[in-house]
Image 1 (cartoon, helix red, strand yellow):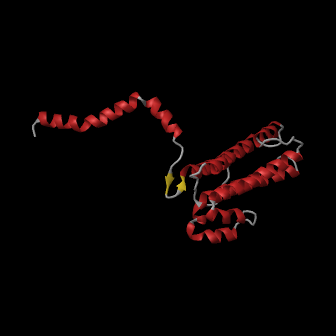
Image 2 (spheres, helix red, strand yellow; image 1 turned 120 degrees about the vertical axis):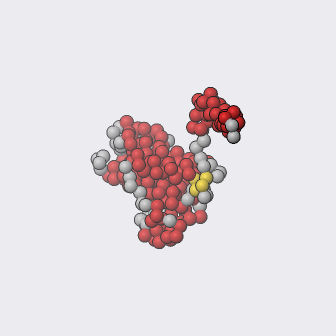
Image 3 (spheres, helix red, strand yellow; image 1 turned 180 degrees about the vertical axis):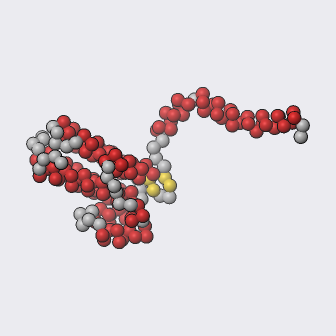
Length: 194
């Protein structure tokens, strides 16, 4: 192969990658905006977005959730039997109806927040307004309100997204987060902020 043939082949093999890179560079702001709108992906029947959001919320709250290998498909029934008695109905529901389980888990934290609001004399209203008034009144930490809102967003996804079908593991972890926050609100309703 002579030098000119080599250079010609090199240019031919690099033409499309260089053109693609140039186009991506030229339209980078539009591509970035488009990628921000892509929020969901399915992998093996698991809603990636839901599972990642549950993990992120737990990290932000400083909550160490049960390890995923403890709630794998092979030992789901044992995990349910050994779970907190209040969580068992939600976990049993999660086996066949993950959407219903998320909604059921949400009701515990929503009800606890409403009991807390009543105990602190906050007038009944919508969940977000109650949460804002509890935070502004110093009855809860800002972090509690943020966690509540993030869990509410996930509940809304479960309620309104017809393709919602997360894994049992991610629903169990969501239920654990809602149960912990509900317990925290119940303790606050009985006494001063921790």
